[in-house]
Length: 103
Image 1 (cartoon, rainbow, N blue to C red):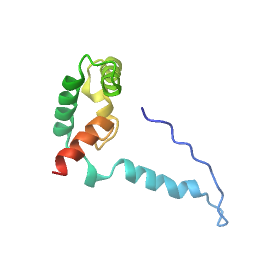
Image 2: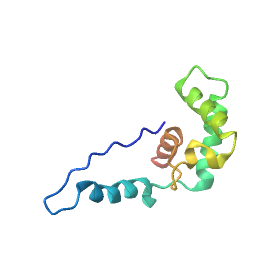
Image 3: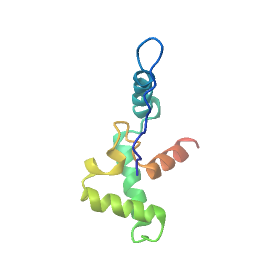
């Protein structure tokens, strides 16, 4: 689950606000192309993870995957992995991809 970002506006002596400078940093962190997961790989990892945790609603990962499937109604474009343009919207897929690429 993604928590809403809470920002406080602090006015700088130059007349602008510090939040304006932070917007670029936030957008860059969300679309960092160096760490992007290829679309096909992301969906393949998502399918593997869903299969692994299928019926394991009593685990955090199983509950997360089950909720994702239910609320997206099986549409990959609405699943957690598709929440970000770099396909890093699901922490389970991110961890599996990082683990596989670090080998």
